[in-house]
Length: 431
Ligand code: PHE
Image 1 (cartoon, helix red, strand yellow):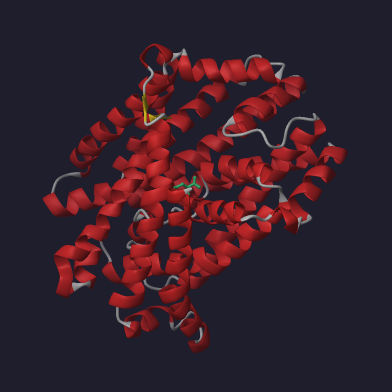
Image 2 (cartoon, rainbow, N blue to C red):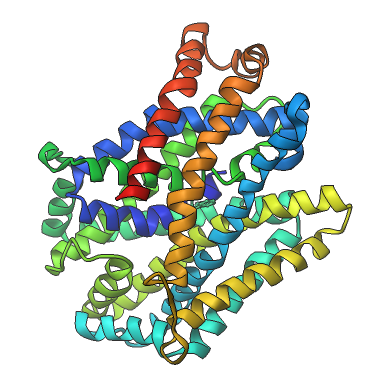
């Protein structure tokens, strides 16, 4: 689960959003919302998986025998994960391309770096296609091996590697004393004036995205947890690792940004693919080594998340139609591949197209992060808060929290969480 949670959301969205929303005040908010809201809803998603014990659709059916058909639809929020996978793997494809670029000479100025990134997206169809296809094969190969011998093995190996790479990079950034101190100040001294409604809502959105919530990933992984697992402690460790990686990434990225005077508010992928690529180039050979380490660690983080997006639907197809894992993955693969290629086509200049003024990539991103995920999270919280029996939840969590904490959790699951999520969803849609 930590492998799923830690991904491009922490590595790329987190530093970018911190940069754009005034630094530390954003982090304070992100922490408050993660513990106050996302934590509560995360436990609810875990309980669907633990009590249902199977794929999302069948878990909902089993847990709501009275309205089986209606509630089984809630399991189809897993389609959101498939949609995310298609554009997410394209971004991992760009990262793969940068791993190779880091072995040769990186662009020296931000203009050059911007032009290079722009050209990869809009002029180099074949390169984008090749990188996306390689990532696609890698991810589907891992999922084809199953949860235990594919996904779990990959995570057990990749997560510590990501951590070690990050520690090495962090240690290196400390040697840029001035930049490091500025980065630490930027990240840790809160400036509460920067908090606006917009910032609150984007922090909540990021908290959900970075914990992989609302699209059935958590219930699916939870279904294969062993009985003795301490759910509360595990959730806290996942959140802790998630935040730690985000902050470590933030420290590394901003140390270089400050040390070389780049712009902290650089939007979108710019911070990683443009600012950092330029900064690495300025460091000469050491920069190349760091760039390789950095992009490989991003690649690891992304692949373990992408794998988790494919598993829920695969698990469902296997159970529902009694087909083999390979066949289920073939169906899903064709769908995801076509969507991914459409994203590439929509960026490629000669064939580019937009829908309602947005690229196909942006539409998928907007529809999943701003519409499907928040609605999914509300539906799951409602289901656990109002449809599941309170006693079964107490049996599940009673060993890991005392009665008072359980009551607080239950209350906020029923009332605070749905209202807060509704606020974010409405704001995003009406804005
Ligand atoms: N949590 C992942 C990240 O931070 C993204 C993700 C979203 C993974 C939804 C699975 C499901 O990058």
